[in-house]
Length: 126
Image 1 (cartoon, rainbow, N blue to C red):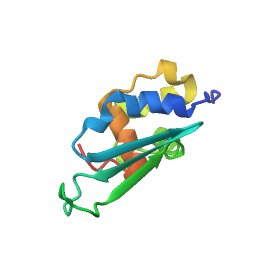
Image 2 (cartoon, helix red, strand yellow):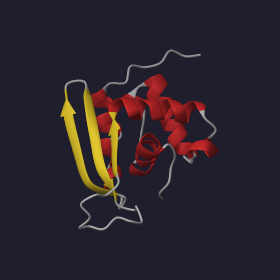
Image 3 (cartoon, rainbow, N blue to C red):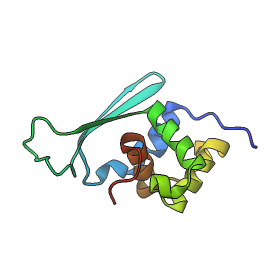
């Protein structure tokens, strides 16, 4: 088995959060906190059937750099039917882990799928 690449918080920030994925409608009230060595994404689940724009208590989802890496590893090793990700997402996750961020090519769809697996355990939207 090939050696794994080092994937930093800056890497996941760039390839996942910087992909445009957070523009999908299910990401509402998005907040990203960045600090040395990590980031934390918090959002209201805009597709939650009980959610409205004026809702003071939406379902809040939090995803960290560590959560994203855990999701990437799960996507690489799991059967796609258990996570709901596409073949492109699985391929890019494998590339990220084994070749590094510079070799990966996440688009907004594949980055969104990783963030959904990190936040919900599987792809639930889109």
